[in-house]
Length: 339
Length: 280
Image (tube, rainbow over all chains, first blue to last red):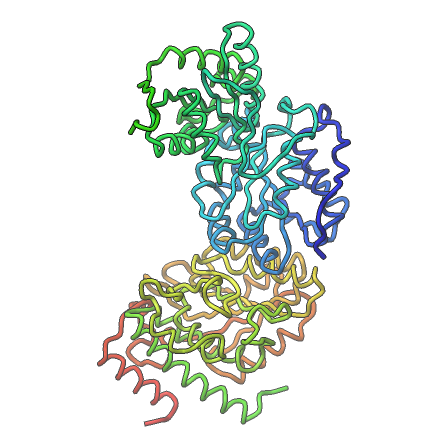
C-alpha cells in the first residue's frame, strides 16, 4: 500500500493566491491519493487549518473529533499503532500545551509515525490575543525526545515539508502561521531536506539565522544592507529546528563571527536558544543577538504590527544588524588555537 | 457459551499461579503496585487464557487482538501474564524495576514484547484504544481492542473525551473494562472523587454497560462474551473488585497501592493466596 511519492502536481499551485495552510491542504490531499495509509484528524478546525481539504477528498480517512485535542492526539497514536500515518492539525497553542502530554507520552515516547501540522503559531493570529498566540511551542516541542521540529517560511516550503515528512520516520511537528504571510520563495523549484538549512544569501560580515514567516524580512534586510550599507549579510533559513544543522551554524561563526537569530517565538527556548547552544558548545568568540518575543505575552494586534513591534520586520532586522556590527567580539586570527 | 466447569477450573488455577507470580515479581522488583495488580488478575486471566486472539511468538502479528492497560501501574501484575503466555522468559522479571532493565513499573511497548501501548500516565489509554479500534475498522481487520481502566483513573477528563468519541464512531470492536477496586492512592475513590453512579455515566456517554463481580470467572467471561457479540457500539464491563485481592493484609488497604514486600511478608502473602484457593 505504500507507494513512493514523485511527480507532485501541487507545483502548479499559485503561491501568491494560496496561503501556506491551503497549500499544505492541497499537498496532503495529493499525497492521500498516492498513499492509502495517510489519515487526517482535526478538532473542529477543519476549515481554519485547511486539513478539511483532505477530508473532502477522503471522508473515510478523515476524523473531526470535536473540540477535544488531548483525545485527538491519543487517537492519532492509536491509529499510528494500527499502521497508519496520521496527519493531525489544530492550532499550535492547543497542540503544544493543551495536548502536550499526549504528544510527548503517547506519540514521542512510542516514537510513532505521527505528523503534526500546528497552525496559527507565533503571533500570526495577533488579534485573537494570548489565548490563541503561541510563542512557546518550539521550546516545548524540541524538548521532546524523538520529535522533529520544522518551521517553514512560506507556503511552498510548507508543501515541501509536508511531502518530506511522510517518509521521515517518527513524529514531526510542522509549525506554520495563519497563512497570510508573504512568501519568500517564487516557486517550489528548490531542494529541500529535513535537517539541512538553506543559505538564502551568502555573506561574510554577519549571519542572520531565521525561521518561519520573518525569514522574508531577513532576506529583504540583507538585500537592503548590501545596497545601502555595503554590508555582506548571510541569511540562513533554519527551517528545521531539530535536528538542527550544526555544520551551517559552526560555519557562520567561523566565517562571520556575528550571528543574529530571528524568530516569531519567545527568545527563550526557541531557534535563538537552539543556535546559542551550538555556538556555546563550539567555544569560539561570536557576537550574538536573539530577536523574538522577549519573554512576555504579546499584545493584541495585527500580525504585521506585532512583527514591527518586536523588530521582526525588515526595518527592525536592519536595526539589529547595524547594532550588532558595532559590538566588539574577541578576534583571534588563529581559529584553531581559540578555546 | 457459558464457561464450562473444566475452563473454570483451569482459569482459577491460572489466577492462583499469577497471583503468586505477582507477589514474586514485587519481591524481585523491591516494590510495586501490588494492590491494583491483584485486583486485575481475573480480568487479565480471562482475556489471555480464554478470549484473546494472539500469537505470543509473533507479538506484532497484524491481526492480533489489542490490550491497552490504561491503568499502566498494573504493569507489575501484567508482565507475569505476558511471561506466562510466552512473550518472554519469566526469568527476565527478576530484573523488574532494576536499573537498566527493560521492565519499569509502567511497561514500555518498545521494550516489552506483547505490550500494545506504553501507558502509565492515567487517562491516556482509552484514546489510544479508540484510535486502534478506528484503525482496525479502516484496515478492515477483525481484531478487538480491549482497554483496562482503573476506577480512580475515571476522574481524568480525557477518559470521557475518549468515551464520547468511541460512541460517536460506534466502535463495536472496542471493549472497556473498569477494574473498580474502589481505592485511589490517597483513599477510597468515593471520598477522593466520587465516580458513581459510574454505570449510568458510561450509559449516558453511549456505551452498553454490564456490571459484574470482577473476581468471578463465570460473570466476567459471560460479560466479555456479550461484549464481543454486541454490534451496536462500544461495550464497557464494570468489574467490581477488591484491591489487593487474595492477600488478607492488603485487601482494601489503600497503603498497599504501592509497597515493598520483604521475605516475611512474602511468605504471609503467598500463604494467604493459597488459603484463597483452598490450598494449605
